[in-house]
Amino acid sequence: MTHLKRAGAILVILLVAIFVVPRVIPIPEKLVSFGFHRSNADTNRQLWAAQPMQYANTSVCNDCHQDKYSAWSQADHRTVSCETCHAASNAHLEGKKMPALPASRELCGTCHATLISRPANFPQIDMDKHGGQAECTTCHDPHDPRKGMPPRLPHSMEGRENCQTCHNPGEPLARIPPRVPHTLEGRSNCTSCHGQTEAKQTALPRIPHSLEGRDNCLLCHNTSAIKPFPNNHAGRTTDTCLSCHQPA
Image 1 (tube, rainbow, N blue to C red):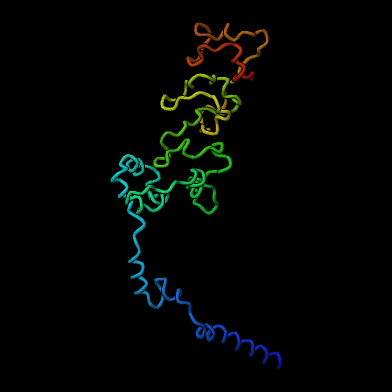
Image 2: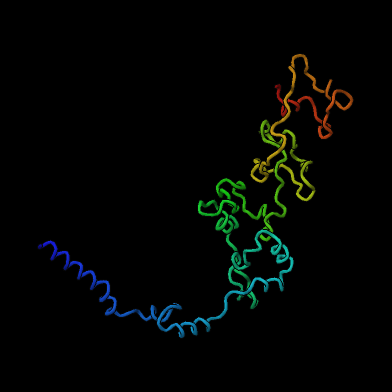
């Protein structure tokens, strides 16, 4: 019986604490004055209406930045407003410079860093591995992310550990379109920019015979002898054949 009385007393105290105490404690003025769901919401709306506008519609940016707007409006980022990345533009419209953007890896990672809660079809990357720690804008135009991206490798990397075996340093890479010619200087890891694709040719053709007594591949494999001799192999020497093609 004593336990029941004690439990009842505790219950009464809890009910008083929950329903009575909050009514007698003064409510801070800030809690009453701000927030659209407070008691004097009309006053609150007037306060907010008096605040200067900070954000503008994205279409306003088109007044001065037609080229950027045109690229953005047709690209994957068209659902992301300019101010999402560039911050509020009100001061900029009054002639002031826009605030400097953070480093692109930091900014782009806000949306594109791998996060398990994001939709599976949302473009996500491993920020520690992707791009060799280069800034995102090295390869991607932020207004049109797919524009100018390095082409994906048209072949498997199996048996091709050293890209320079075929793509000689010091010369523009023959198989790269003219819009992005470059040399290999300072580019030790080609796959940092050029990702692999689902190539139809999964591996290099292997040599279907023994090499015993066949020290010079070009005795048989040349433009006037055994076919096929790929046109893009012109200028190759026997020394480089085994760099790619291994005996079966």
